[in-house]
Amino acid sequence: MRHDPESVGFVETQQVRLFTRDEPLTLASGRTLGPVDVAYETYGRLNADRSNAVMICHALTGDAHAAGWHVGAKGPGWWDNLIGPGKPLDTERFFVVCANLIGGCRGSTGPSSIDPATGKAYGLSFPLLAIADFVEVHRALVRHLGIGRLLAVVGGSMGGMQALEWSLSYPDEVAHAVIIASSSRLTAQNIAFSAVARRAIMDDPHFLGGDYEAAGVSPNVGLSIARMMAHITYLSEDAFTEKFGRSPQNGERTPGFGIDFAVESYLDHQAETFLERFDALSYLYLTRVMDYFDPFTDHALPRLERPVRYLVVSFDTDWRFSTSHSRRIVRHLEGARYPVTFREIKSPWGHDSFLLVIDDYHATLRAWFDRALEVGT
Amino acid sequence: MTASRWGSGRLRADLALVAEQIPAGARVLDLGCGSGSLLAWLMSERGCTGTGVEIDPEKVLKAIRRGVPVIELDVDHELAEFGDGSYDVCVLSRTIQTILRPEHVLREMSRIAGTLVVSVPNFGWWGHRLRLLRGRMPMSKELPYKWYDTPNIRHTTLVDLEKLFDALELGIVERFTFTETGRRLHMQGARANLTAGAAVYVLRPQ
Image (cartoon, rainbow over all chains, first blue to last red; front, side):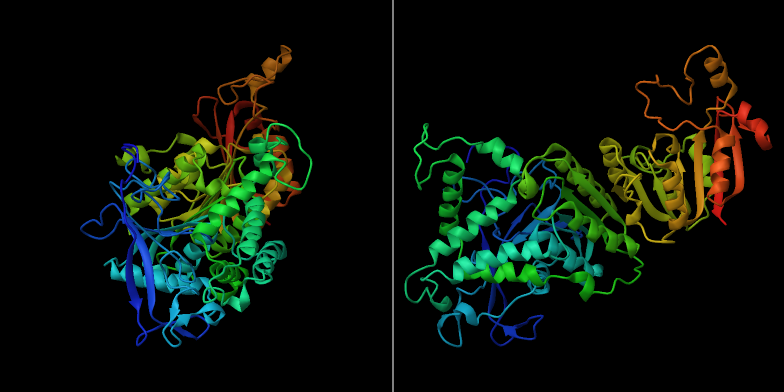
């Protein structure tokens, strides 16, 4: 790590058991899950009246390591450009928490964890999850950390779904919610992309009905294809053109069926690094959760004395969750008379924009969080 | 952070008159809200709630910093996002001259709210007429732009505007007129079309 006054510095992921086998988590489906361990990180300090806590919800393939550096790592956490001293989520003023989702594979209980009933990995016997389940687990973490009411809950993409669900289920526990490049209901096209990804994984001969770990193999081909295809949807056509154009991979064109073009090499690299950190079963479980998310059907939106204050942000070139997804969220919230601010940010980069430094985007978040801190919990 | 910098502060004279037309506790939609000063004032001083609509990114940022809920959208094409009767008052303050489809926007406003407050510059003001007689396009304190760089694309006089209100079955509940320098005029009827530099209308769909 180079010396960077705007970095939170070295951090370590913590782990806590929030539910046990005897006192399990009851899922939205009615099934129970226990034990439930959760990996999380925190940055900054909780103030004396516990009114400066901001919960970060990660997207499909994110993890608890949002900011700062792990010892020996090549890069910082996935939202390091947002969180740190002097950054929009200024850790001199805010206490920031980020946790890995259950169903994931980065330290929280998921399908590759050991099922205490069998002594083997859960595999496909792991229960199906809902966004509401992520919220319940992270609420338990917030209580564990001694926080009563969150100043804000923030998320991009699937993280925005959690922020939305949290604010609708427990408006008394959240003062502000920030929902970025997200959706309140996937379209058929969105589901179709995930369907192809899941099929690639499940039809990989090494998938073995989900019990691949016991056999010491892994459906790497399927998971690679899933990641490559998903990655195409995270960028705009212009972003691909800007990054790669039609450049050949090796300086000159050698037509064949190898990695002829630079873009092919890029996707290949994306897939390879993804295999090192992600599990195929988690990919199945977490994508399926998004398919069924439909909070405005599940929740009535009552008039509230003290409604959550919302910020909804979209990016004009995002075609995975286009602006129309965000507008739908805004229509419902505004229609329920909740205070909503909405911006469509101009960015050439597509869905991935929410992870990047785009001046107008970060200026918006900075203004919003500064105001949130003034308003308080 | 001082209250005067980010809080409600004092309102510009024309906004103060608009604010006076809005009952305490009303739910207000402010189209072309700028940096949100009217709504910030109504929220903190009058217990109002509401939403601003603005398309200029810098102004939107200021409104956000002030804590005014603001939705970035195109007034000409996207007012369908707001539900029927979802606001008590809809304000269009010095914005009508900049929009592409004023008739459509007024129709949408009367669908969204029970009371409309519209403030406009008057192209029929005598100073503008003089400039036109001299063969030049109108320019004034109210309308300080050259013809080729003006954001004002819909030029109306008070008389023409009132004909449009009529056609849209928008009843004029109140009309306030001002001189070019912002002094209140107490003048009824069409004569104001010559003397007024600007006007504020309170309208109700009939």
